[in-house]
Length: 223
Image (cartoon, rainbow, N blue to C red; front, side, top):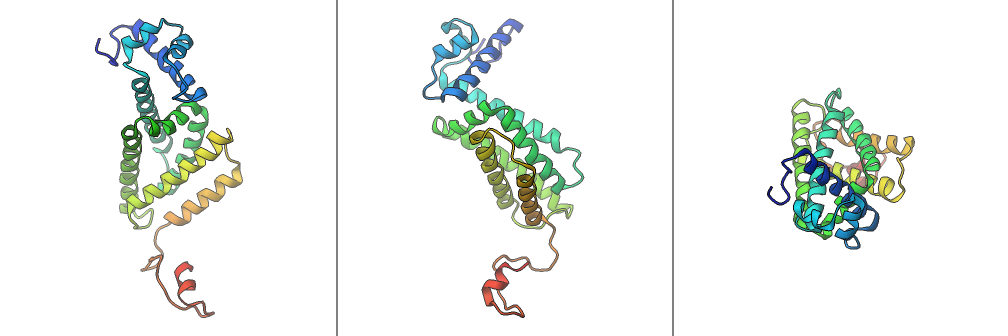
């Protein structure tokens, strides 16, 4: 069996999974730099040498955990939003599901955030894949006329940023789901930001004077 590869036997697969589960708990509870391979193997109930049958190092098992979370997150988000009536409903379902996922898998979520200080390329790859998929779905929604015609890459970046900070504040710092009013406020903000265009020009820097005055500033922010 190649190092870090999938075991050839069911018993090996169970042992490898025990190590991954133990590393998830160890990294999530103590932090990557304070965690040790000996603690991981103790949690898993295996000899320390067994670790190196499946993983090369502490960094190697962290990479597997981040990749595992990435696959889980993309799959679960896809399932949660596949039957949404339109993109705005998909955004609502997606945000709520993401927060539930992050709260349920709090150790994995903290591990993903820690990875930027261990393997920056891995951390960036996680978000690159997330943004590319998000941008593609937004482009499809624009083609159907469900959302406005802004830059889909910029929209994806903004939406991921909202979800990231919601997850950081509520599921990581406060260890809870946000209340219904908070969710409704954020979803209302997203809904207004993505709503299809209702006039020919939606330039956010458009200037002009309103009947009541205010000049350029009033024209810039009026919708």
